[in-house]
Image (cartoon, rainbow, N blue to C red; front, top):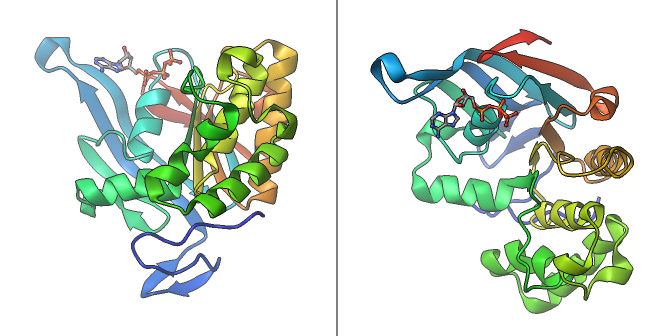
Amino acid sequence: MIGRAPDSDTGARSTGEGIRMGRTITDTMVRVEDVHKSYGSGAAAVHALRGVSFEVPRGELVALKGRSGSGKTTLLNIVGGLDTPDRGRVDVDGRDLARLDEEGLLALRRDRVGFVFQSFGLIPILSAAENVGVPLRLRGADPREREERVELLLALVGLADHAAQRPGELSGGQQQRVAIARALANSPSLLIADEPTGQLDAETGHAVMELLRAVVRSENVTALVATHDTTLLDLADRVLELSDGQIVEH
Ligand SMILES: Nc1ncnc2c1ncn2[C@@H]1O[C@H](COP(=O)(O)OP(=O)(O)OP(=O)(O)O)[C@@H](O)[C@H]1O
């Protein structure tokens, strides 16, 4: 593991199991209880999530599968604090998200959760190294720490020799590696990935999935990954299946 950012709201450092600054660290990284989410209202309402409950144990890689429209993105957005449920409860890393104000949610997304998207989401005019450094800049990390961490992260994802290249000069698989390094920049507890191989060919996608599998182990991070990719389903510690807004298989 290559270091963990200070806990933004406690000033403490993660210590694994036990009590940290009055907050009990449990074995569960994500707890979702009876979550409902609809878009629109009346006859036009779409019930994207209809009573979803599950847990993601700390340190595991959990794959979320399901057909298009089954509610995977909606669920990931809610777990990541990007959206709120209509009903139900979500705890991430021991925090009840409903009890966090905007600032608390912002701190959670910045310091505790790393996001990886299908479309990579890199800033085209920045180099790979600068892209990885963005979350560290947002956190106000000092330039020296930032430089060292970016170097470590690019090495971790196998791109030490590509630091100066811009996204347009990298392959799709390399861009997703940069995005994974960026997601790890602030040493999140939880990595959320939404179809991370959706734009990659099978071989490249497999390599990216293996990288995700490896960083979950080496960085002691927990991951929740929505995917259709059967290679990841094989690499996951467990698989959840969503169908029509409900978990149908653990
Ligand atoms: N902002 C929105 N407004 C209205 N309906 C939405 C919105 N976002 C999602 N939906 C609907 O909610 C349902 C679940 O969508 P969601 O994107 O969560 O599914 P998904 O499993 O991630 O699909 P995909 O694999 O295609 O990305 C779908 O019927 C979708 O049309």
